[in-house]
Every structure is written in C-alpha cells, then in structure tokens.
Image (tube, rainbow, N blue to C red; front, side, top):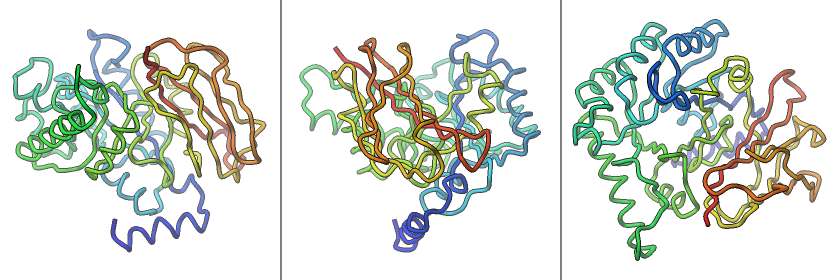
Length: 343
C-alpha cells in the first residue's frame, strides 16, 4: 500500500466517518438455471427480478475491483453500492445470466477454476466464452485450480508442504487467467467459503484479497482476507429478505478474537470489540445456525463475548449477528462468523 493510500485509510478512521458512506454489499450467485440443484440456483425469472429491484431502487452497481479499491483506500462510496459475483464459471452463467446482466448494463465478476476449464468439463464455460464476457466488461478472477478444500492438509503433509502446494495452486490459477483473459486481479474466492487462520495469512502474504461465502456487508474496516458476501440463490433468493440484506451496513469492528474458523472447539466462541456510535447493545442479537439464539456477555461497554448454547454439528456453521441502525431507520448492521467444526 502506498503512503497516499495508507493516509486515506488512517484519515478516514481517525475522523470516524460514517460506516454507511464507506459500506457496500457483495452478492453471490452460482447457477442461473431451472434444472440444477435449487440450493445453489435461481431461475432466470427470479434473477431478472433481482436485477430489476436493483434498478428500481436505484442501487449503485459497480465492478468488484472498483468496490474493493475504494474500500482499501478509504474513498467514499455512493449510497446503496452493490457488486455482483458468480462462483465456479458455470455454463448457465453464459447462457442465462450474462444476457440479463447485459440488458441492465450491470458489471459482474466470475470466479473460475482454470484446471476444470482446461480439462474441458462440460458444465463450465470455455476460455473463449469467458473472453467474450470479459470483452463486454465481466471481471474474471481466481477460485483456485480445481475447487478443493484449501485449508485441508493431505495425509502426512507438513505445514510447509501444505503452504508450498497451496501457494502453487493459487499462483498457477492466477497465471492461467492472466494468460487467457488478461485479467490479473488478486481476488480469490475461497472454495466452499472455507478458510482458516493459516490460509488467511498465506493469502495476505501473496497480496490477495480473500472472499468468503458468509453473509454481511463490507466496509473500510473489513478484514480483506475474509470479505463477506450475501448468497442470493435458493432459499436466500426471496426478495423480501434479500432487500433487507441489500440495505445492510458493516459494523465498525475494532478487534475480532477467536481461535480459528476451522476448529475442534465445540461450541466455538468469539469476542468482538465495536465502535458503538450507531447502535444500542440492547438491540444487538446473534443467532447460531441450526441452534437458535446465541449467548451474549458484554464484558465491557463496547466488547461482547458470543457463544453457542449447544454444540454445533460437524461441518459448516455460522454465527449471524445484527443490530438496527440508530441513524438510518430500517437498516441493520450485519456480521457473520463462519465455522467449520472438525472431529
């Protein structure tokens, strides 16, 4: 980061500028299809309704690279800013999603797995199709070579061997995208949305932005090794709930403490220290996926300790935390902590 960019970020923090002025929402899609698994799909009709809603409500839909660059440098974002993303580069993105997005003139990002494209998998787009979309303004970015669980170590693999293998995977995927498309945006969407401390540290050392699948708004204080996105497919495609998420804000988090996102600690716990200027702690609530309301203990005037009342199931889970804004009626602050519970 240059001195000028660092100055912008520090200056914004010191002034305490409103989070809303620097916040945004990233939407995540997979399939736009009527025939593929409903949990990761939206129909063309539903996807069109989403885009029409963004237009009717005058959302500022911008490319992901502009959104991230503005957040990293502390620049003021327009109100109601949104970026649209797709994971995996499915062929239906080319056949069904792209024509709709072109109609509305909305930019978007597709995270792809180059090795799957190179091996000619029938369900993903070809490089030629991706080039065509890129020439029309789509941004093509990194989703690793073959969509493996990045944090998992192979049998007998040391930490150093895991790091070398994972680094090679990320950089090889990046090179293929650059060679075929010309794009070299260092944004990596974690496959399955799973990451741990070790992976976050590696991403940061390589100069990448890490992007998850946990819900929440993004802001200048976000951790750029674990940016959240709101899933907008399947159950999450309903406009009555998606509209609330689109108008959400990012908490200003001074400190976030937990053992690791991938953990054998069960139930897991975390502590968050907030800037409390725009919400009341009495209205702050957290919910545990598959369990219900989380236990909250305010250990100081601005720090809360969050735990689950019960053990979580093995695999992926979340704490979702929200609080209504004092200054913007109807808008909620939103933070999600993803977990992968291991045996």
